Length: 321
Image 1 (tube, rainbow, N blue to C red):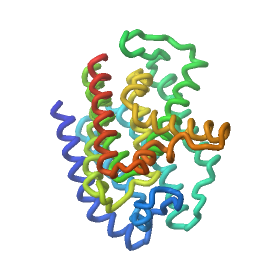
Image 2: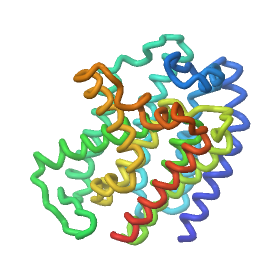
Image 3: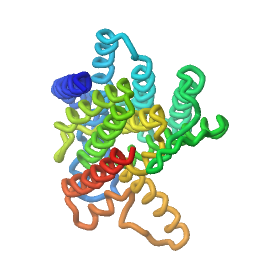
Image 4: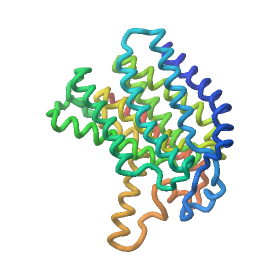
C-alpha cells in the first residue's frame, strides 16, 4: 500500500508542476478548444481554451513508471503492458487533436484511421494477454464471482470490443469542465482497490499513478477550466480503465463502475434511433450531460451528481468482488 500512496502523490505533484509549464506553451501555440455552435450557449465562451492537456498525464505516467521500474525491478511486466497500451490510445488521441488544433484540420484524424489505430493497439494488448502473459481466456462474472471460461475465438473479439467501447464512452463523457477527469479518477481508484483485494500489486500501482495524474490535472480542469484534456486525455483514460479491468479478468465490472460513461453512450445511441424513427429528440441534447445542462443544471452540479453516482456504483463494485 505504501508504494501506491507514494506513486499517487508523486504523479499528482508532477502533473501539477507540468501544468504550470505546458499550459502556457499550449496558449502560445494557440492550441484552442472549438465548441459546437449547436451546443449549450454557455460553452461558447470556452472557445479558445487550451486543449490537448492530456499530454500532461501521458508525460507524468511515463516518467513515474520509468522511475518505478528502475527502483522496483520485480513484477513490472504487467505495469509496462497496461501503460504502453494506455499511452498508445493517448497517442492516437494526440494525433487527432494535433491535426485539429495545430494543423487546423477541422476533421482531425480520419475516423477510419483513428479506429484502425485503436484496433491495432487493442489487438496487440489482447495478444499479449493470451500468448505471452498466459492469463487464460476466463472472465469473472460480478456478484456471483464465477469464472466463465470463454473460447479464444470469443474472448479476443470481446476484449477488443470492451477496449474500443471504453475509449469511446470516456471520450463522450468529456464535455463538461472536470467531468471526465473526476469520473475517471473515481473509477480508476475503485479498480485499483479491487486490484489490491486480488493481490495484483502492479495493476494497483499503475492505477494509483493515473489517479494522481487525474487529480493533478483537475487543478486546471475544474470550472472554469484553464485547459481541456482533448482526445489525448479521454482516449488515454479509456485505455487505462479497459486495460486494467481486462487484466484483472473483470471487464464486466465496467457495467457497474462505468455507469456514467455507459449512460452517456446509450444517450447518444437512443437519441439517434429515436430521431430517425420519429423526427424528434428524446433528449434535449446528447450526450447526457448536455441534456441536464440544457435543463438548467450548472456544470458544477453535473460534475457533482455524476461523480456521486460513480462513487456509489464504484463502492458497490468494490464490495461485491
